[in-house]
Image (cartoon, rainbow, N blue to C red):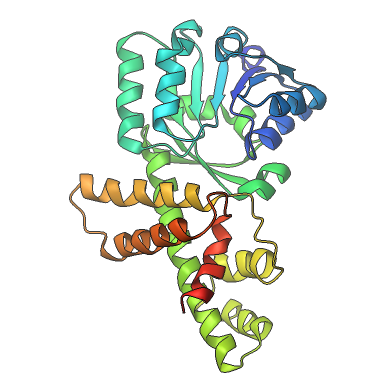
Length: 294
């Protein structure tokens, strides 16, 4: 694809992550056409300088790179296949699924599109949260052919650092495994922090020591100081979404006959938290739940 063609970007899914990501692409000079079920999200894209339309088919008509930021594999498949979006794209187009989808379903979808002579699919899920989306510092885990990933660099590099993870589906696999680790770290950190405070330790002192010692993690460096101790619990990533990614990771392990004993128990605990907290709870509220159940 030429650089001129690459300037036509479609974006489906303008939620907490999609809005700042699409906005950065507009700021970088790309022509961005996008849609979302929520009118207010479409309006935000229009105010940022993009073109907001009502349907996914309209996005496809204006796209040579189509970015998806959707809740799950089922919705990705529905949009691309049932809504006719993939068929409406030029055969030379590339579909970039930046959602947290299921890796084996992603692989099967890519094979189905290829068999029908439709647009090429790559997976490129992200880590870094809303803050990373706003700053353009996301970690992008891209699965697909090397040449295709390289051709997408002018687009994806606006959003963050691209790491080619292997064949299609590998990005989604790595994202799910990363979030399984992140969630397990966060719950373990929360239990340790609650126990330490009950003993009488100062939470700031605990975090300072953890962060200069072997207990350091993203939970001690970012989530606890910025979203838990502040009482905000507002990272922008829902507990339900984290649990979904955890389940993708443990299901992947099961599908390839690999044990995931600790991971499965972490899923069990997070499932219990999800049942007891509000449906809209931020994933950092697992710390509040750990305090209640300590």
